Amino acid sequence: MRWIRRNLLGVVAVAVLVYLFIPIAVVAVLSFNKPEGKYNTSWNTFSLDGWKNICGVPGVCDSFMISIRIGLVSTLIATILGTMIAFALVRYRFRGRSSTNLLIFLPMTTPEVVMGASLLALFLNLRFPLGEITIVIAHIMFTISFVVVTVKARLQGMDPRLEEAARDLYAGPRAAFRYVTLPLVAPGIAGAALLGFSLSFDDFIISFFNAGTVVTFPIYIWGAAQRGIPVQVNALATLVFVIALLIVLISQFVGSRRRKALENDISKNPVNIDALLPKS
Amino acid sequence: MVAVLPSTGSTSGVVGQRKSRTGYFLLLPGMTWLAIFFAIPFVTLFLTSLQAPVAGQSGQYVPAFQISNYSDALVEYWPQFLRSFVYAGIATGLALLIAYPLAYFIAFKAGRWRALMLVLVIAPSFASFLLRTYAWKTILADEGFITSFFNYLHLLPDDRILNTGIAVIAGLTYNFLPFMILPLYAALEKIDPRLLEASNDLYASAFTTFRKVTWPLSLPGVVAGTLLTFIPATGDYINSELLGSTQDRMIGNVIQTNFIEFRDYPTASALSFVLMASILVLVFTYIRRAGTEDLV
Figure 1 (tube, chains in turn orange, cyan):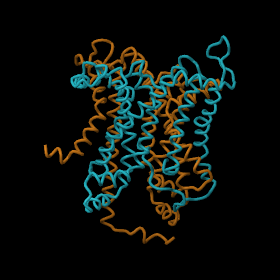
Figure 2 (cartoon, chains in turn green, orange):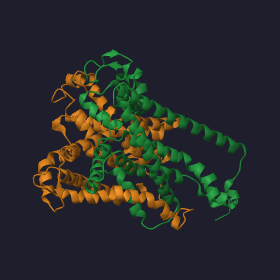
Figure 3 (cartoon, helix red, strand yellow):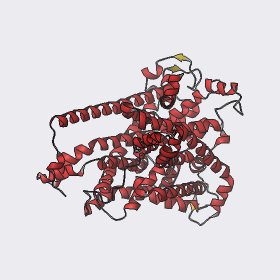
Figure 4 (cartoon, one colour):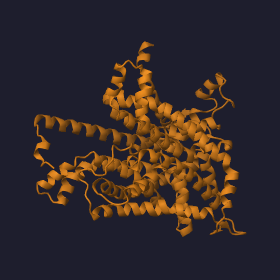
């Protein structure tokens, strides 16, 4: 009892973390279920049907592949465009900075239903046919801002003197970018791409407005929710969750190992970078 | 979702900023994309909201200036509007209560577990939003543990949680919690722990330290987190559709059905426009307090 009182904050913190994972545990457990009726909402008997024949229900894997494809294309384009903007914001002076910031900030705070509706209003008025292209356009639009913010944070945390040092050592602007800037920003860009992909892959509301007859994975789930979600969907979603979690945990682990190795290196060979740089 | 962490400090005038045409070249493609597919659609949305129907042809509209679209829509759907703000407001308050202890723990007490705990906060969003929401159907089911517990205490007006407003609010609270935790953490993490020690040394009780030092210093995070939770929660219709009954529909449901099922584009556009306008008022009040540079 006294232990709980002394560690109350920690107990609450862990409880909140557990709370965040309860629905995921439900999804995962129900992927091993053999539902009694058509709705897979309560436990009946154990079965591996969902996992053994993961594409067994028509439409599940098709929609899954469509979402992967849309996710990859829109992430690629949004990452390039967003990274360019992040560089401009951190490294360059230009007019209209505050309106630029506003145009980047607003998509992150506009309700999805409003973005979906307004984009659909544009496509309808232009008589632009709805399909995978309009979904990709929409996904790029709402992921750019998240890419900008992620890459920008990484760029701001970088010492600009490292590039100056490269230039002082007669590296051309291209070489300095290729061998100094890019490797340092790369983890930020990779993180932004991962975030962008997960946003695109999981998006339902904006996609639903602009999909026409295309059925992405979330749109499939939405339709299936009315007539009963097949266990295969739970299995696929669990698989995606585990893979994504592993990717993030491994990259965290590798990142911290590398940082430690670097710190060891520096402590063994002390070099005062500041002393080497020209006084500005 | 890492992205919602407010950045540290302002960048203008930082060492290493150049002035050249390259800056504009870097901005051009991305900002053009946002202008065409984010900003201009608001203009078309506004124009659509004023269109008039073509007599005898459903789903066909012509450009017009029917302001009455707005009054008609608001007269018909004000309960859903109100409900959206109430549900989102309650969910945001609950999220703040739940998120604060966790954010505080990660910022001050987690030590070497900090990075892992932050990953665990973001990790739930790797599992499908729709399926996680659907899972609450199982958790809050009528014969389930939680409903029975609250029924035992006679706390439920309808003797059930599922298909009531309570389930919708519970779903909203859960779904947008990470958007509350991350900005709170970002603000708390910036606080110098020595300030808390100083307050303690000066004989302030733990509660006074929190009220006079921690809470005021964490306010930027509270404001950011509240906005980032409240705004998506107001527009959400997934929780209401999956967990609520037809009595619990929110404004997002109305916009979606009018746009996609009834093809009543002007009404749906007018409602979207009013929703966006009310949210912009909120955001601009915030910007006035914090400045744009801290938001992105």
